[in-house]
Length: 294
Image (cartoon, rainbow, N blue to C red; front, side, top):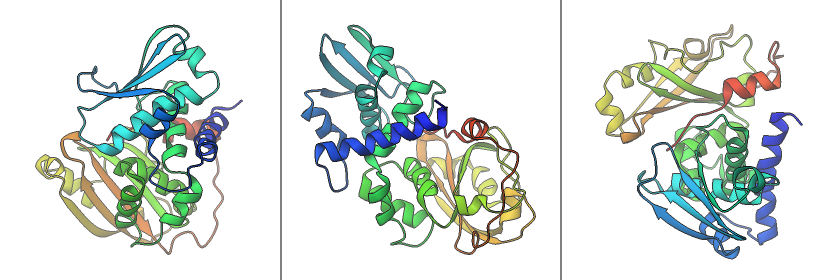
């Protein structure tokens, strides 16, 4: 089974659990789901760096510890949902915790381990199920405002919501995470990917110098203060290609996390279809796997 298919099935398993539990509205509460299955959940402020949570086992009893040092309710809820992924996904318990003990997780798409990635995708499906999420978006102004509205409704982090938004919106959207002068990842909606001959932004590539993001990131204090900025820019300046089109660039600093979230959006791009060539599915998974923790 391909990795893409495994990730898709993990996401679908998260959505299926909602039906099994009779949950028909947002926001989904992973703490409540854990309690329904007699899984004790507790905060743990002193976990190791990079560890988002832990799944504990004693015989047939299970518990979850989640990192509380990051003051983000959305990230903490995602961390608990990630551990539930290990609990509910077939084969995960036998792999990550075959006997009594503890499994430390790295939720938030920060791990290359396939079991961690599957648990992340389970969490996405559980907390932001496609059917509910699609009905949420489009009610506010395209881009960051719409993402923030969806994040509030789902009680999920801004970055996780932005990634899901790019996946499910019908409009042209690109979600870019950066640290200083460097791109961490870029996720594009299908409409944005319809532009011909795009320059795919790889992890580690530089932030284009003539963008609002580059100017914003030049002052780290703006990032730490969570400031915002916006401008209009030609999509060519960000993504290259052959087709000029003006897009909105919205930038927000993510506080002490030290990173910047950029949202490019346009309602005009995507009316015409362009063939994508030269990229197989497995390569795209590797190049477009997001890395977020907030």
